[in-house]
Image (cartoon, rainbow, N blue to C red; front, side, top):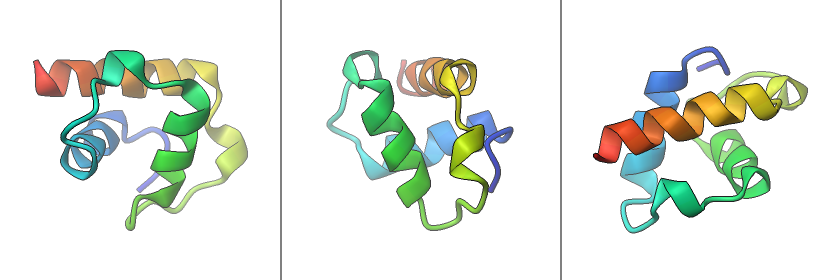
Length: 64
């Protein structure tokens, strides 16, 4: 899985962290959680603020 797969990342984060409100997650934590997903395989440096914002919004949409 790559950074551009925002929706899939959000789904996996929602499954991995069901008790977390994605609106309260700091980007440093979000970045680390994405890197820790079992299927994630991309350059950590590509996970910039805009990508993390998109992932966070997709996660919010996923749990809404």
